[in-house]
Image (cartoon, rainbow, N blue to C red; front, side, top):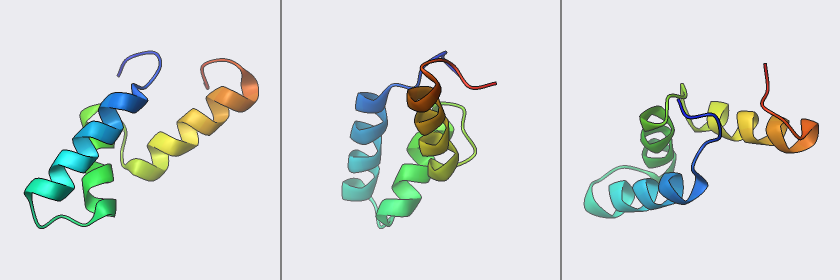
Length: 59
């Protein structure tokens, strides 16, 4: 996983996956999150929220 997740890449991958397949938005976001090394989209967004609140990389 990169030090800071790439939000633009996450959104683009999720949109392409959702558009090109029968995946739901949740499934597409989970896939995009896993591509960046997270368990799922909830883990991805939680990490980003902690990063913003603490102004640094979560431990």
